[in-house]
Image (cartoon, rainbow, N blue to C red; front, side, top):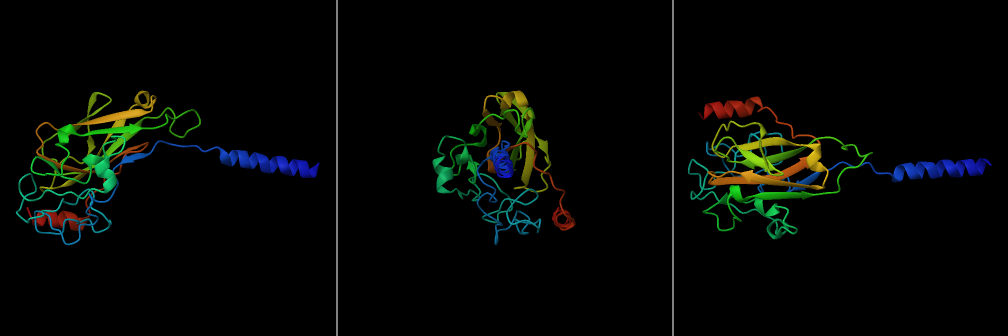
Length: 234
């Protein structure tokens, strides 16, 4: 009898462990600093290192896209176009939208798949069910992008135009942003979220990645060194 009870107890534990509670977390593109990594050796428009937060391994919010030709501005036709895409991003299997990441979206970039206004990202997933940690909850579309100069940037989520929350005021040309928008639970139920970028007048922009998650990306405050450098170069 004792052996039977022990066997049943072990079986119950194993059955409990086999139940995996999941939450939807999907990234299109990867967090690799637009393919530059930390952009060592590259400068921003103010002649300071493009990566200026000092506490991250990659280009992220508060840093600047590299001023590749050191002309004093970042934009189309100025020699700042780049293509840091992996083979998988170029191939964009399943048309998820990877091809819109790690490349400058401008008319002057031969490798660009189009302009920002053409960008579409498609998230496909198993819809959360009762017992999942994110069942019944709103989610968030998170974006990391650089040199968006035409305010305000908006996106369409499932055909509805929404404003992005987060840092919106660039401190310098080529500024890298983080921003997010809410995805309603109702939109999550069918297992697909389609995001269209609305940027009719934006001639040059780049996306590092776009993330669907149950929480928004944090929007860090610039550290004192970053603020000093920005003010010094005004």
